[in-house]
Length: 474
Image 1: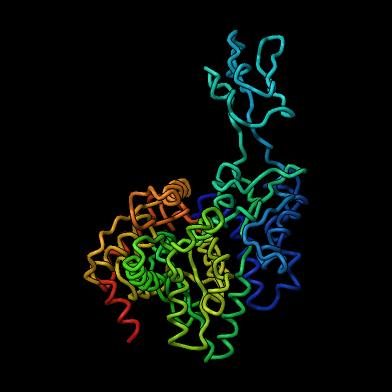
Image 2 (image 1 turned 90 degrees about the vertical axis):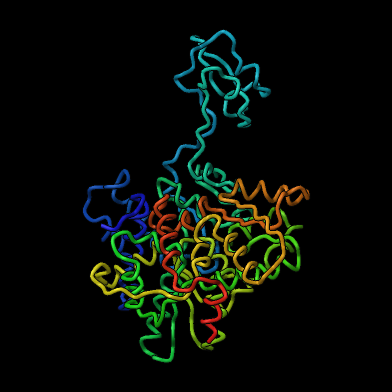
């Protein structure tokens, strides 16, 4: 079995695989209602209280796997019926309460929300509590704990609240589509809509028309994802799906590093634009800093433009770890460049839907990018690439990067930049901790991904950024 971090990912994969399998032969519409029964057969439930609820939820998963409501373009969506088993959460008094005489929790609460039973055990009145946490801080036994829902805890932009039916509700004015809640939800009640059918449609068209070329643009974080096979075998498997070629997004990263080095020289201060969730967060929360975002496209968009300038009628599909990329490719500046986006989870489902024996395939090498472009996948890699690009330009600019791994560090840096007190002239913003190797669409998460990406970078054919980008242009 392929390695996934959680059984929720495995369940999502099973749905995507069945949807893809039926789509290759145009049998999806006739059998779409049968998919829940394929995954949850018989009358014995394996995930929920009854098999009928399992199938009802699976039906909602199928809808999002085939693209969801086309009038609702939001990438991160809640399956309400799957969310009802999660407790509301908030501050609760635990069994650690000793019924002490001090009652510091009561003194700390300004809403009179705390009372005591006949044993002097504390009790919180939820109708009065405003979740300020003062009581928890005051308790000498740490007996009051904040039991937030996993989705709420994971969402650092506070875009998730609890609805009237105790379901998660997403505030899309705040949401940056990073997918942290998707990975964190233990019930899989929050998920990302899929464009897997659009990709299959592109590939089927290329089968019928040899002039219709579809390129796979693979993110450098792919190096640490498919533990059961060699990277070269995975690249061969992607070509087996019908892609005419596989090109490293790291090459686009090389081009971005060159342009950002030049732009930094001109402006004196810059933030990176490679992470779409970071760009969205900055635009929504620090609009006065928008002009500081690198004016170039992300590496994926840059590479797509490079390909389409070389081959006018080709199509491009980004394959990576990022749910926010599904929002990015809908932005006006990316229209006509990136034609679709899928995650590594969806790639695995696509490969298995065609029964491709990945670990038995010959290897296909990637040799498009420099080690610096490949390093974009991890925290610190963008700054290293820009530093290299400045050096190759012979620049005299004193480069002072501020590395931000995770949203809290991004927020801190932007707050300082907003006040004009940031000690640095370049913000490398990555919303996912560790960089793209921590993206919500990864098969696995952890330190292994970092070491694999670094090894992948060391194997690059081109030693310099300019050599890689110039070679592509020839």
